[in-house]
Each structure stands twice: as C-alpha cells, then as structure tokens.
Image (cartoon, rainbow, N blue to C red; front, side, top):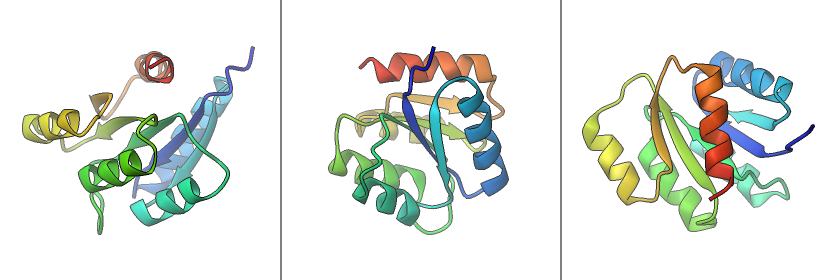
Length: 123
C-alpha cells in the first residue's frame, strides 16, 4: 500500500540525503533530497509540497533552525523533524519553540524514523 507521504530531506551531506530518500522511497514514501535551505525554499515555491521535512541542523549558510523558521513561515502545517549528528539540548528547545515536531540524533534507526514520519504526517 502506498501511503504517498511526501518527505523533503534537507542535508548538506548529499550522499546521506539521497541514500535516505531511496530508503524511504522503498518504504512507500515519496522522498526528495536537497542539500541546502535555498534548494528547500525553491522546492516549497514549486508545486511539490512535502508534508514532512527531515532537516539537518548544521549546514553551511542558512542553518537548520533558520530553515525551520522559513519553512514554518511558508506553511505552518508542514511538520519538521530535525535529524542531526551535532545535537544540543538548547537547539532542541529552540526548535520546539519554533514549531519543530521532533528532534532525532544520527545515526537514526530507519524503523524509528518511519514511525516518527507517520506520526508527524497525522498532525
């Protein structure tokens, strides 16, 4: 069964992003990977609207928290999950105040991630 939840992955580690997109596609999601905030905003400006965004925290240029704010400004219904290898409690708290759905550490178990995406898509 296709659940066709659209997921955008925003991560400057392009190999991680594309591999994760493939793994999510195999599980019936529609995933698209971009490498920076600017590309993410270009996708949001197009017809392709994700329900869930998996967002890296540490990116060159516009970082994850600033990107979160831009996504929420574009459409507050889009649920954002931060996936990071460089987490801090502080950034998690700031993220939650900005409307973040969840904050997960890399490496992430794909099963756990899939259940979080399904939860987020129902919000």
